Image (cartoon, rainbow over all chains, first blue to last red; front, side, top):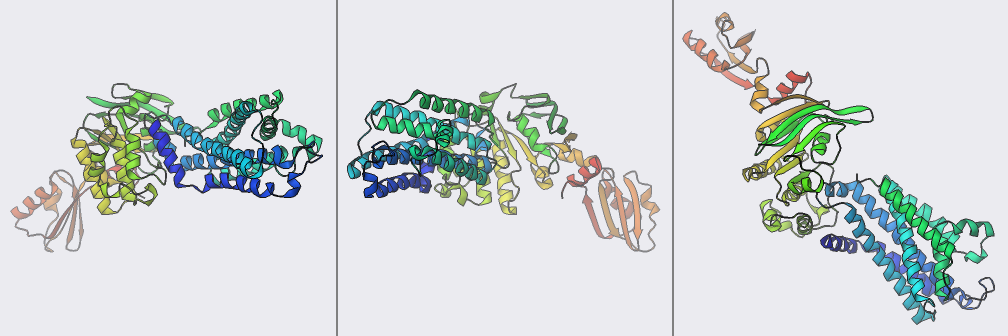
Length: 244
Length: 299
């Protein structure tokens, strides 16, 4: 199993475009947008918070997780299925499930690295406060990431081709990011959109991340929705995943 | 000892039996061929043997009835439409796959044997068709299997690469590995296989040695020669080996069976007839398949 993880990590690093994009885009946006003076003023819409306090860095963490989980992971897995890598593996004593695990580990590692850089560099260059409730922040990050990766595995399970995986990935990613407050802070979205978002995977993740960043406890509803997403997508992808 | 026993195997896809009541057994140390046209159900048959598909009916017993991971430890499988990740290097693939088995072969030696040592750092996507096939064979052998299943091994290879691959398979058999070879390629079956199962449209047509299958073709021998105009074909029609004699000017065409050529030359020489341009042709597996199923195997 170790050799599988190491080999997959090596292969992963030989196609660095995806991970680099997933790290540099959110980081660049954070540092770039974070330098705009308007985002550094307290805002009435955010309840007196500044955009760079939790809204912007929180969303950038979500963006990198979503990029890895909904775009990078399904792309590799569906390519593996399409080209017959999974079929080849299924003739050996190694359960192909281990390959999935190795891939998830790689992609999660990138998301973790991106989050660490966003928190660290945001603090150094923009003076963004470190998460006020660090334990809960890490817990929320892990649970939320797991739920989004569950969704990514489900895409990999049902997408018949690499192209359709990319299509489904972006089709899900952009609306989910929108209702989570990627482009317009959630607080400024219509109430109905906010309500709908509360029951989709990314908004509770984003809100819980911002809550814990600001030093509060996460809201139970958010945790429940993330856990439920993880359970449902996990069970569905285990059921629907085809090896060839 | 029988290493593979297939009994009454049936497999259905969407209401259609692609494998319909197939039975055969493979002896230890054999190269056993599964031969048939594209879409005959050959791959499905071996997928059931390899434990990748569950038969709808019938039984498959491999190495005395191994299953799942235990079966896969002892079985090396090279399937069609399977691949390695594009960027994996030759040595990494061998190293990785050898880690899957309890008692793997030395993959360095295996890499040498399939002639890929100078390609050890080449990524899979950059290998030629023949090199990919050789890597695939090496990966099928890296677990030191008792039985190797090789599916359409030489399809798409040039003649030289094909002959090299055949030699490799003969060496592997010499090491005591039983080989189940799936092919739609006559020359390959005739050259390599000790016995063959002919499969057509999901059904088993015959199991026999290549020579035995060819011998089933009625009038499998074909002899032509030129004879003087005065030659009387009645001289040949009485021979037991002769089936039919046709005359086209000076050209005589005889079909028959058994030692046809010897019978004809003996009869001619005792009658003092000197044939010119004498040729003898044997039926091929292609003819055997045609005779047994009414259709040509090659498309």
